[in-house]
Amino acid sequence: MGSLVALTGLVGAYVAKGGLDDRFAVNSNVDAGNPVILAFLAAVAVGIAAGAVQGWAITKLRVPPFVVTLGGLTAFRGMALLFSGGGPISGFSPEYNWWGQGRIGDIPVPVLIFLAVALIAHIVLRYTRFGLYVYAVGGNAAAAKENGVPVRLVTWSVYVIVGFTCGLASFLLSARLSSAEAVAGLGLELDVIAAVVIGGTSLFGGVGSVFGTVVGAILIGVLRNGLVLMNVSSFVQQIIIGLILVAAVAFDQYAAERRRA
Image (cartoon, rainbow, N blue to C red; front, side):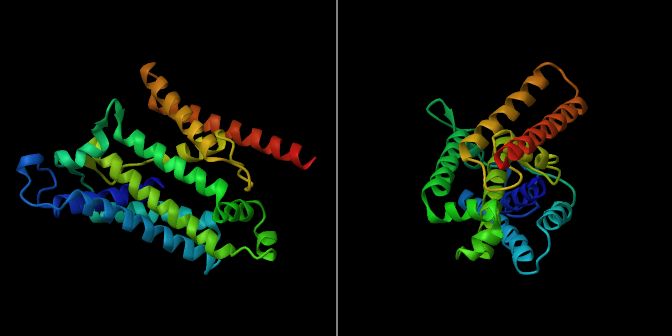
């Protein structure tokens, strides 16, 4: 996810600036560019395409998901570096930056978008047939297939949705920082896994909720901010997050054994 966020963010920034000629120009100094909506659509389109390719490799080529996502981690990062020449793209228009820095009332725009996406995901997972299919495939793909669930299509669709959210996140991140770079999202995978597991999602599949994931993401964010305010070294932060992840997985294993008993 971190590598895909970097790649999609750079694509969106490229479209917003109208190329790399004005990659460092700021606001009124930008000679060419495109509407913000095109930049957003470009970032999301690349994310969807990347998710579709990974889902296809898993469902059609039968490559293990771990191998596909690990390959994507390195491939997408390499694409981002190649696309940008290793440098950032920065200095966007106020209209672009508003999506990451603006407010509606007293609430930041990214927070509102985050809550909207979380609400939609919760409704889809809990109250639609597709959501039930996702839980069924996660819990036992073989049993789900025997009961008529289109396992391959559901699996592919989930990867497409993840690609879409990566594109959306990268757009908001670049707008918030007024910069997109190939090293964005480094280590994000660890935070994502930690947030999901802390939120109650089982690594064994079939168990979890959007609400729990939101809580897990908030906890990880609060923890990181707290460590920064305490002047804890970034190296130590990585150790702490890693230990928390191991502890959460150990608890998940214990809970799974209790459920089976």
